[in-house]
Image (cartoon, rainbow, N blue to C red; front, side):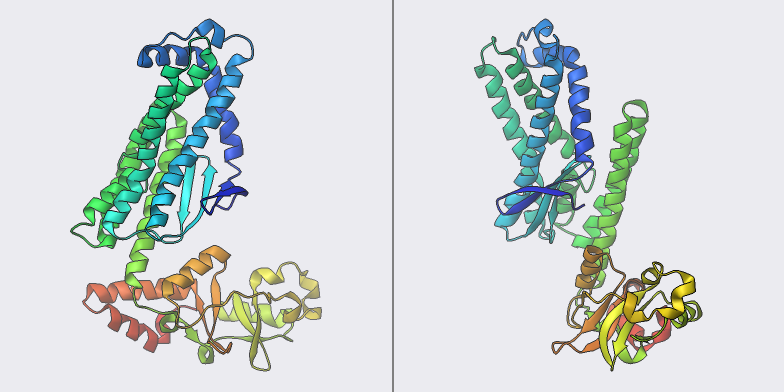
Length: 395
């Protein structure tokens, strides 16, 4: 979720995802089209007397809808800053805050594993919403009745901020309530086990939310799908982090002596034949024994098959390589692959010498072997067995 960068606050980049450009006008339209009903609800909740006939005349509802929707997303942005600023006080780095289809999301470089820190960070967002709701309510009381449009927007934001705080505290991991649940579970459990339990509760919550959405609002079904996928993904990420604790890239990588490589002057016919025969879709490219690039099956697809004999690997290979050191953590390799959108990373030592390659399949196989060995009481011995038997890894 990259999005369009629109500014920076507290040193945190603020981005807009393309879906936000759809959901903002949609919310504005929904609010504007329902101003009449909303006036009745807000008058009842706050015991005020906003004139419905004035607020539903002409273009006023659509202006109210646009203003209220913009204010709502501004409050969501403040909610994410609540999480982020508290996390930064604990020393955590925030990559960005992005507004998108389901509101906002703060991307942490690393999530807190200390349960007290996570609890504080998780509740900070809803606390901000409650504070904004109180401020908006005081505004409703302070604004004279002769400004019904202003009172409407403030009353709407007062009510929705409290509703957002309540909704976010539901145990739908990785929502705020789910993170609070994980923090409490982690008091007497490992972080990985607490995550697994919180994720299971979150998935059950998502199923329930989807069932409600069938009878209430299709938007809830989409939100439930996101929660379910996000809970599963974070649980898997946490399990991998626990399994790879203390494991380096050098423990998992394929050493250069065992690698299938190609030279820069290899023609594409020979390359594709080797790919078919060896069941590989990517190779390090060497020239005079040194790494000069990486070539994958995708790199060859821009060249017509009839011209393959006229092209060499050096004509299509990628030369702007993202590399990693053998002493880097295995989780760093996973993060780098995800960030760069690549399936394999060349491994180079401090002197810049090419010493091996680590791929997604290496990581998945190592993870499975470590977990199997860990279940038997020997996670590290399982990793040693993996390193000593190349047949265990499907290249």
